[in-house]
Length: 399
Image: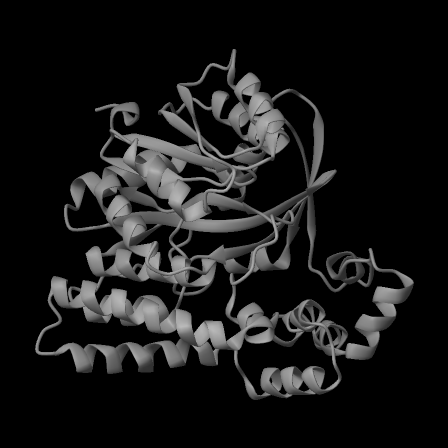
């Protein structure tokens, strides 16, 4: 069977016609073909530009319009309800799906009836005239133990989002419907992934399947544990209470062995305390209390949290990230100076430069950072075949 009869791509968009048009042009240049549903909640002028961008493309694409006030996750659900193929996936309008990976992922789901979703490796990129390929963000093992409780444990213990995996469409619809029972983006993303693990194994295959843009997105509240700890820790607790009830229901419906409801809830509490401990370290706690006593605005407080947790490639970079004084000097004197550029200038980044030509023949420079180069080929890990080439092939068609 052709991929077009088995797979549909859902592209949610909101007031970003330039990004959507670029993604659609990229998809129209691919030899792999499948239906595309554009889930558009843009305001009037942006929606008209989106409709215009879709005309004349060699692409099986259809636009579904929504009211601008619709929440992202409800829009995902409504889009999934329009899918008629067995498999589907989401792709953000400023991200990139590697189409050559799709037949591999869809074939896997066709051959493994119990699996709920499949995805490959994800990389981060940013277009700044040249394209920075900064790191491999998701490349963990499959979540495939036979017991649903064990899969949830594995999923939360080494958490990597599955929002952009290739799903069985019926699983995605069921998962998205249940996520509307919580309110924050954080709870919805965590719950959707955990419910996917309850539904069946989540396969990780050795192919690059998705590129995540590091371009700033629309500002949202309640999207990360650190942001909620800095801005509204009470809501984090309230949301978790809603979240655990929904997840417990799903586990008990699937079959939780000899566990009763009280034991499932206790299990979930312990698992998620472990998850939260990755973020709420003593250093983070000291920082939050100190900034609160100093009267620091909540948004400023949140921005200062990242350097406490972000990995760095050298001890000097670690010091630069963790120094509050240096950050404040940078914010006053040179607010547009970025740490990756500073690291490159100091010779600390481990960047390798590659020069290519786009599909239209234009020269383009890529910077492959240490986080990308170092993740591929780690001892004991099955890496994607020709990883650099597969990523560059996709990005060369993205213009």
